[in-house]
Amino acid sequence: MAKRRNRFEIILDILNLIQRKGGKVKPTHILYGGNLSYNRLKGYIEELEKKDMIKEIEFKGKKFYELTEKGISFINETKRIKEITDAFGL
Image 1 (cartoon, helix red, strand yellow):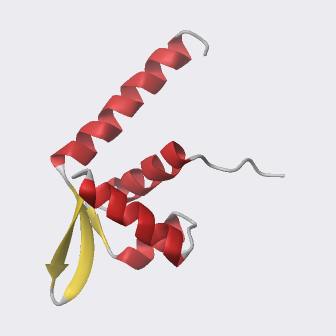
Image 2 (cartoon, rainbow, N blue to C red):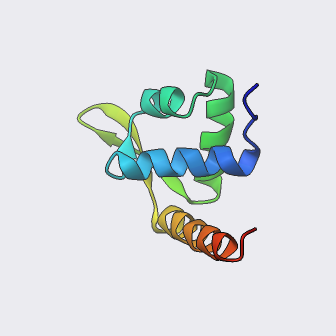
């Protein structure tokens, strides 16, 4: 049986997904790429917007979510922490 992701892992998955797609994505890409239900996605999007990690933008009449500097910084810091923990075998 597959291990369930915790809140931190889901948030990091969402931010990484946006970054991999060039820094902005449609909500449906996050929904499918993050393997989330619509209600859970909505909650995470609201939280990430409140924490200024992503922002909603409109491009050619469509809604997108874009990483902010704070979101990019969060991704970079978590990568750094993972490198440190891996180096110590944790």
